[in-house]
Image 1 (tube, helix red, strand yellow):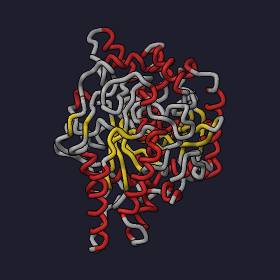
Image 2 (cartoon, one colour):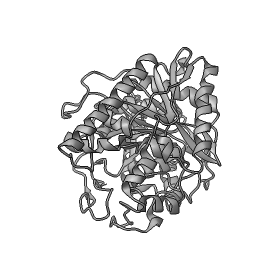
Image 3 (cartoon, helix red, strand yellow):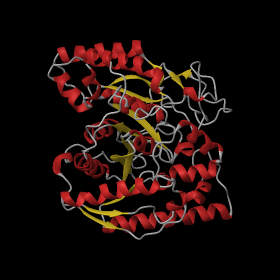
Image 4 (cartoon, rainbow, N blue to C red):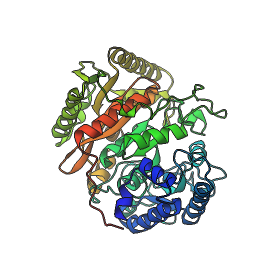
Length: 457
């Protein structure tokens, strides 16, 4: 039964449709593994055992009646604790111990992505921990703020290390083989960065492609996207949750493309640019960064063996920290000269991306130039100061949130036994190409068969 933990969502969907597995079998295995690994990984804020079993039984009846099955029929999934799941505690703060907001009242209705997951047949098994940096935003088993690091989510590849920030619990659950899919959110890299540290694919989709169900003034730079172990699973999940939403102010009104259709077509002829650090991020390197960047760079240029063209870019971008004055989530707009400098910086990044992605189909960079931090290093790095830590953690990822352009992190190798991630940036609405490139990366780098050493269930 341990092997069931590592089947992809698409494989499980096929076995369920052919009646070789039932949704109840898959869900019970998921719940059993969650119970066994929760003390080790700290994945779940709320594991909805009763609700998951009810959903699985309903999904099984649909199979037996011969109904048309959704693309995620019977697949266990989880979502971050600030994404509303009707009836489950909703924590909307998550980034400050002193912030009384989001105290865990039951959600009145599902968030748009949850409604769409259910419509695709998924079994929503619960919500995942959303710790902030260090002990920031941690909550104990009662949901009360705490600074006790034993409540922080752990990295399945080394449980003495973190899986990152924000989407940490979701990444731990997928990388630990508890669920094949989870939904994270990304306000500066919070799907991509923990995905890179956890050996997963994490997507920041094009602004407005996936409905958020939140006021745009408070979340315009934030996206919600899939966390998965395979490119096909990520593409399937994106297919399920993307598309126009009449209640959403920031919403693309065109139907999404087919994200799955071209996955097997390879990358022959795809033009790729490479940048180590956007011309500035190298100053935030750590002791291991040279080896990490070299590993990721090698994986990128090795794609030429599959017919792609990969060329280094000498484009240099300004540090993005000035753009915080634009008033993204967690920051107040700063009128006057600071705001004008932020606008100028955004335009410079926008023009740089447009120039590169006119000459090339995608831009490749590291997702992060560090391996997963130990708990102690993570806490110390955060304690040294927000400004310094933000650049250390988000140097390669935050600009995409300011611009609303898509980026996907895909695992491409290991350094000292810890996963590292390649970030693929594309033009708006190019997620189908990003997943196609990611599938080729996974096939060529030989990382898909490696699994963390965790207790079997």
